[in-house]
Image 1 (cartoon, rainbow, N blue to C red):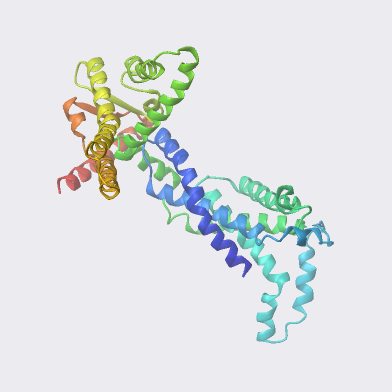
Image 2 (cartoon, one colour; image 1 turned 30 degrees about the vertical axis):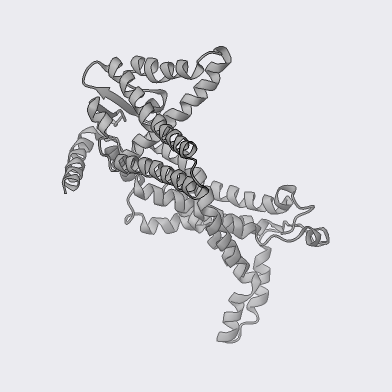
Length: 386
């Protein structure tokens, strides 16, 4: 029952931790490959879910402080392979099929099996995705087990007055064995799964084209870095720090870096124009500012003026504000959907703006990837045409 509780807790905790991990993950993938591979997402997030589940299986269920304070038993078991004696003792009880089944139900047996199975996925992930050798898998599996055991020995990092579970050297042995077994088990399926190199190559192929999600990520990354720079500029300049920072970040830096802001340089994206880059860049930025930031504010101010001018009742006031709110949400949603579908927004058509990927491709793979890129682009063009 405690295992089920731990797994349920992990499943409910996973979305929160996954959300916190998502932004760094997206930034890293666009910086390194220029694209996010669906299979890499499956691997990484399943690995996170596995680690959360393993952790909760180790620490849950949590006892009360009173229960821990009243504990008087030992906190460590430092005799290696003590579990073998316990198993042999229970093996003497096997006389027929029923006692054989009961043998595996005995805690001295299923705890051993649990500690081995717990880290088998860890060894599989290490070999498959992280390309770890057997030696490194052995070492990292031992460190993971040591982390679990020290967590127990410290009373959950000294939250409890003493250890509420046993620090067992046999757990270190069995967990490490599980990681090594996972390494060898993965070898049986290695030919079926796509290799890490293949995933990287396909990511680079997709990265040669700037996707809608990459554009949205760039938009928000630039805004974040802009406000960070505003804080820095405001230390030295008291008047108009927002305007000065905007000129530095969105005009001067892209001019020097040939269409790249700090954010776009990190995400390997360059914004280009047919001609008159400097002037078009300023006009485009001004238009985007008015379109995405000032237009919603104007609508809100307009709604407030209507409410105050006509002295509307509470019912109609709520209706007006709710209508404006829903319209603004719909406005942003439509634009996000269009960008995610990699459509060219009207202002980019007006200013003849293009997003170019600057992702670097190894010379040895360049010709091969160029051919695959042509095939990918043809498929995408057909799908957009349909």
